[in-house]
Length: 178
Image (tube, rainbow, N blue to C red; front, side, top):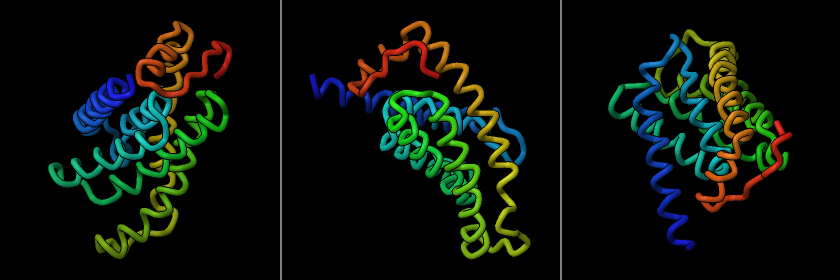
């Protein structure tokens, strides 16, 4: 049973990565990538912080290699992806906490850490420390809102706990939690 769960998790992770790579350039607003935040939050709730972190890294690396995206594809995703899963687990299954973790991790931490990456490694000297904060927070709020609505609907129909059980991760079965 344990090997079956690992296989299903790898398949689900692969699907999240594929969807993230494909939809991120299509459903995009200049300076924002809300679909990446949607993927981060849903992956965090489905599989936990470590899988969500891995998913964000894989999507970012693929986008950097094949689409020429700058390194903010990583700095703008990994902290939110991980904190989304951590906040969800610490809150014992509150979906809103997963969204807050993404907004804080990407919108604040990722945005501020993108400044030195873009300045020192990418050569952008016209930036300030808070340059990316407004667009990152905007993107996380858009993607987070969509993820919240999706996950709440899945939770009310008991699909969320079914997916979590199928993946072999801890399920929080209360329908009243948001």
